[in-house]
Structure formats: C-alpha cells, structure tokens
Image (cartoon, rainbow, N blue to C red; front, side):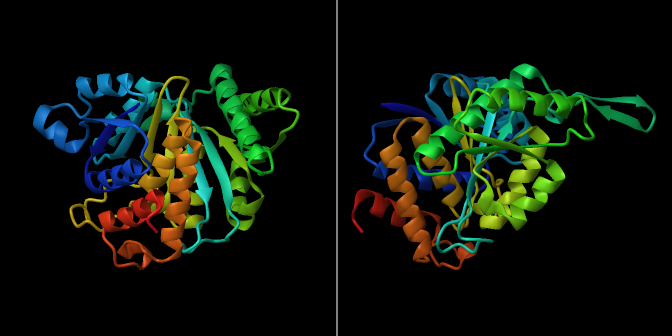
Length: 334
C-alpha cells in the first residue's frame, strides 16, 4: 500500500489533482490517498497557509502529490520542500507527439539544487537604498546534488540514453561560489567512469537549450540558475502547462506541476492536467512502480497524439474528460 499525501491547494490545483487521481486509480495499484490542506484559502480561514497537521501528514506519507499554491506559494511549497529536505528538483524536458515543440527529439532532465544559492533568502539593507543578498554554496550540498545527477544519468543510460551530465555555472565571474560548484562537480565525476561529464557557462547554456537541446541528457545546476533555465526549457516542449517536476530527498518525495494556480481559469474545468499526470509518472518511478509509470506515460502520449486534449492544446475536452481518456488506456480499454 502506497500512502500518498494529496494537497490540491488553490485554483486549478483542485481540478488537475483529482483528474490525476483518476489516472492513478486506473493503474490498479494499492494507494491510500490522505488529503491535506494548504494555500491561500486555508490561510484566509485559519491564519496558516501550511497547517501543522498538513506537515505531519506529509512527513508520515511515502510521497506528496501537490497541485498549486497562489499568493502563499513561498509559505507553502517552498517551506514544504525545506521541511521534507527534498534537495533535488527534477524537471524533465521531453517532446511528445501531438504537442508543438522546438524539435521532436528533445529528451533530457534538468536537476536543480533545491536548498541553497540566493534562494536561501539571506538579504539585508546595509544603507538607505542599498540592499544585498548572500549566495550560499556548500561542498556538502554540491556533492549530494552531483551524485544525484550522475546516478540519474546511470539510470537513463540503462534505458538507452547517452549517459552524460552537463554542469551549468558562472565560475568565470562568481569565482568563489561557482568556482566551488565546478570544482566539486569534476571531483564527483571521477567516481562515475562510465558517465561523460562536461560544463558550460549558464549564459551559453541558455542559448544551447534552444539551439541544440537534443545533445543533452542530464543537466545539473544551482538553485536560481535552475529555476530560470528549466522554465525556458519548458517553452521548447509546449510550455509550463505540460511541465512536471519532482522534489526528491533521501527520505521524502514531493511531486507537483510547474504551472501556478491560474485563477483566471480556475473552476472552468478547462485546465490541462498533463503536467500533473506527468508529475504522477515521476512519483510512480520514485515509488518503484516502473511498469505503471511507463503505462501512464504511454497512455498520455497517445491521448496527446490523437488531439484528445483540453482547449489550450486545440482539443475540446474538459480536464476530467482528458484524464479519463488517459485512464481508459491505462486500464486497457482502448
């Protein structure tokens, strides 16, 4: 029995998460879904965007499936990542048939360090009109994120991928922080003789994800750089509405679509569930349910290729109808 904490959150999270549960239930796997609350509505009602009981539930479950947070996102999803110590943010960048993409052969993963960098939020006003932010890069955090990236490359190599890790940094300017980042990258790379290692400056990398995205396998970078790079990469394979993500640590996994709460379309049942379904695919792999994960991903790709989609992709189905088309194929009914 897989015990999953389900947090729908705000806006379209209340639609794409239930739609994804439809698909997960179609796998026939033994799930126990434990529902918890977080987000804007909870804050207005209780004064806490992330209640203690939600934290306790998340810590007690095998994984967390999260929908979307609105204005309270920093107090919800960012805090939850920290509490669960999910230090690796994993963002697949993959082209699917039926979706307008830059190239049909794009298939790589961006691994972003999730706990340090400028997102530590260490800021100060040192004089009137003068503010500073402290960028934190430690050897310990570097080592674990690089090992995660190289281990992922080894897993992908078994599935026929190249077996390569690309490090994106700015060590030519940020000589101490990114200097350490690059140094530890090549130190860890020595432990993986069967995996290629290379590095690019982040500005060049930003260009290469557009001009030659097909050459990448696993890309690893720091927190802020990864946030920017992965959103840009999503634009090459259909946009944020199709972008899944996983936050993984040594003991917990948190899975969420990259898009926000989209209040302009919330309640209309037209939100695209693709990103959340793909996040559930990542969750299934995290749980060791590889066969079910492949079945769901293949079913979704078939649905996308047939145009059985929500209006944003040119289809005429609502959120739940599209999810049901995926579920039918997972169950073997189509």
